[in-house]
Structures are given as C-alpha cells and as structure tokens.
Amino acid sequence: MNTSARNDSTTAAAAVPAPHPAPESGAVTRLTSLDAYRGFVMFLMMAEVLRISRVARALPESGVWKFLSWHQSHVDWIGCSLHDLIQPSFSFLVGVALPFSVASRIARGQSNGAMLGHALWRAIVLILLGVFLRSTHAASTNWTFEDTLTQIGLGYAFLFALGLRPLRDQWIALGVILVGYWALFALHPVPGADFDYAKVGVTKTWLDTNGLNGFAAHWQKNSNAAWSFDTWFMNLFSREKPFLANRGGYVTLSFIPTLGTMILGLIAGGVLRSGRSPQAKLRWLVIAGVIGLGVGALLGALGVVPVVKRIWTPSWVLFSGGWCCLLLAFFYGVVDHLKARSWAFPLVVIGVNSIAAYLIAHLFQDFILTALTTHLGLAPFQALGPAYQPFLHGAAALGIMWLLLFWMYRRKLFLRI
Image 1 (cartoon, one colour):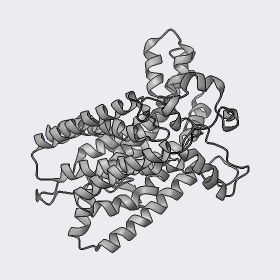
Image 2 (cartoon, rainbow, N blue to C red; image 1 turned 180 degrees about the horizontal axis):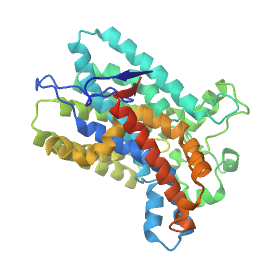
Image 3 (tube, rainbow, N blue to C red; image 1 turned 60 degrees about the vertical axis):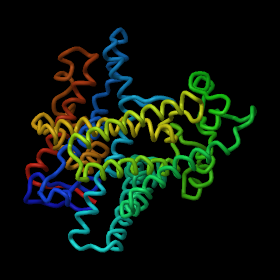
Image 4 (spheres, rainbow, N blue to C red; image 1 turned 90 degrees about the vertical axis):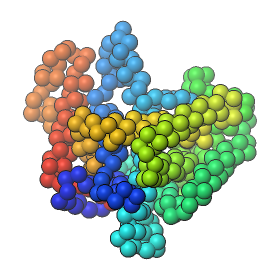
C-alpha cells in the first residue's frame, strides 16, 4: 500500500484499479461515474456516524426518521435495505474497473504472469487489512474473514484470472458459483428439533420473527453449511475462546458468491469498455438490472433460495447485482453520458480515495467525535434539541472526514494498494 501523487487531478487510485481509457475510443478519458458511484457507496458507509437510529428512538412518532433508520441498518435476515447494498456495490465496482485496468496494463507491456502476481499481492494485502481493522479494539488478532475488504481479497485473484479470459468463461464461472453454492447449502442437513440455537447466539424471539421453515431452513442463521465450515475453519486460528458462531450470522464462505457479484461487475465493465454506443450500454445495464432484480426476488418467492445478504445466497447475488446495475446505469447515464458532473463532485472526492475513506471511517471516527466534544462541548450539537444531538454531532464528524479527503484530493494524494 502506498500514497502517490499524480499530475492529472482527474486520475486517482482507489481500493480497486481505476478505469483507464478504452482502446476502442483512442481518447484519454476516465469514467467519472465509477468514482461517483464508489463515492456514494463510501458515503453511505461513512454516514453511519450520523447515528440516525438514535434519533429515531428519541422521536418514535416520526415516520421519516423511522424510514431513514431502517435504511441505515442491515435487515435481520431476509430482504434488503439501502445499507445492505453497500458491500455488494463496492464488490461489484471492483469487477467493473478490472477490464479497464487489464487493458491499460497490457498496453504498457505487462505480462499475464506479472499482472497475476500483482493481483495476488493485492489480494493478500486486502485480506490482512480487513483482519487488522476487525482487530483494532481486540486484545489480540481477531482472525475473522467477513469484513468487506477481506471478502474481496479472498476472491480477487480468481476474479483477475477471469478478467484475462473470454466473456463466455466469465458467464460459466458465474453459473458454476451460483449453482454450486446453492447445492452446498441445499445438501447440508437441516438441524434436528433438539438443536440448541441459543448456544450459537440465535434467540427464540429471533427465530419467531425471522426463522425459516421447510426447504428454506437450509439457509437458517448459524445452522447452515457455511456456519458448519466456520466451526472448523475459524478454530484453526488462535482465539481467546473457541468459535461457536458469528453473532450476525456472517460466514467466511460468503467470499465465493461475493466473487459472483464481482464477476457481474466484470461483465458490466466489459460492456462499458466496449465500442457500443452510450445508449446501448445504458440499455444493457437497465435490462440486466431488471432481470437480476426479478430473478433474484422470484427465486426467493418460489422458495428455491431466500434472499439473504448475511450469507450471500445466490438469489442475493442476482437481486443485489440487479440494483448495482441500475445504480451504475444512473451514474453512468447522468455523469458520463449527459456530462452533468458538478453535483457529483463531493462524491468523487470520496470515490477516488476509497481506501483512505474506509480507513478514516474505521480508525478515526471515534477520535473525531471525541475531539469535537472535548473542544466544543455538546451545546452546539443540541441546538435543535437533545433528540437531534447524535445526528448533528455525527454530521460535524462526517464533514471533517470529507474535508480530510478533500485535502488529499487537492494535493493529489491517493492511497492505493
């Protein structure tokens, strides 16, 4: 990981390879829409500091704050909120950027071996960075692999290898992942009536509200195939106490279908890099988005496989991938096709430095919040009443985090792996 300064203020490095001009166009261009979309995703993550749920609890009669709180929270199991689209969007954009990066590296004369070696190095750094971030408040290394960066890292080398393959192979790989991951869960035995869910952190109240029955029970929280794998795999690492289950139901093997999400991005990136007209690219993204949403929801409705983000079910790959395609269509259509870019500048500042944004949010958020109260007290943040204090306090911290990224942007300092 290094910090680089560039002469071109429109060129920046992020967590993933930045897009380069398509050979078909012959022009030195950049898809600002990818930076804007990535910035939007990172903004949603950074905006957790607004603590909207606390405002909603203080104002239980407000439907607006209740709505905003729901969309800044992850659903308990089945379904999707706006917050649930952060990780798939970030993973999807890794794939979208890859065709541009590969083409640029090939144009600079890099061999496939050199490119794969760099991809493997990037994968290792992402995995370890994710583990590091999960360990910042732990007494020792917290060997867990559900962090967004770690999940991307576990599949990145495979994604890069697919980026060197024909489109047909990418579609085949996606199909194998979806069907294979479905079969892994479907063939795993459902726990018996005597299974102790309380032992794995699943309460009776949770089961009564979110529990799955019948065939869908193969995807039940902390009793499924991927959970079973983790009860072996996670205990291979040094731990303060034996691993029994992840409190949120997240699993290591989600990196496999997350790779499927990245492959969808890889295919979409190939479309954006192609010689098709902007209208044809937009049409492909919209159609792909609608199909993904429809098929994913239908698989859930028919009982084939529930739409669960926390274990990244195949229906979730398609459903969230549909949303990703539609969001990409919006940003590409408005920012790059219609050239309406000024409104997106605050998002671009975040998107071109997404690794820095990720680290600032995870490592410095609490420090900034504490510093604000130390030097200003709570009075400025209670100007609208005590109920709004968490929101205004968080908004000030969010503004400072953005200004840090803006300072880096102005000085052409971009953190990359």
